[in-house]
Image (cartoon, rainbow, N blue to C red; front, top):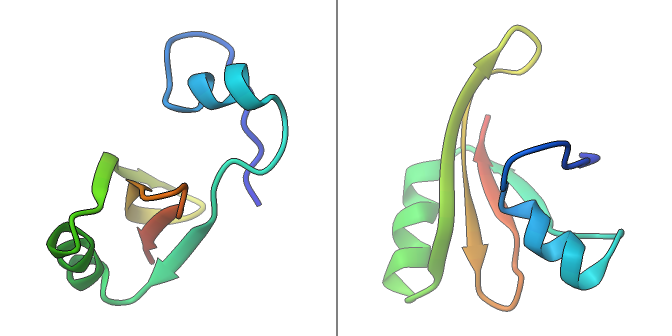
Length: 78
């Protein structure tokens, strides 16, 4: 579960919160074959809204992309 609070800037979550208010914004899926899923959604013509790569001491290195296909969600590498 991820709790989001926009403090400053213009993250992708801001628009959703302004339109829909608080609540479920997306679903995330950890997958072992991240690159294959990314290729698959592109082949299906699903828009990738944004992609991130981050690293921290708690969760390590990870990548994620957010989809726009009827609000499907997000896929993350583990």
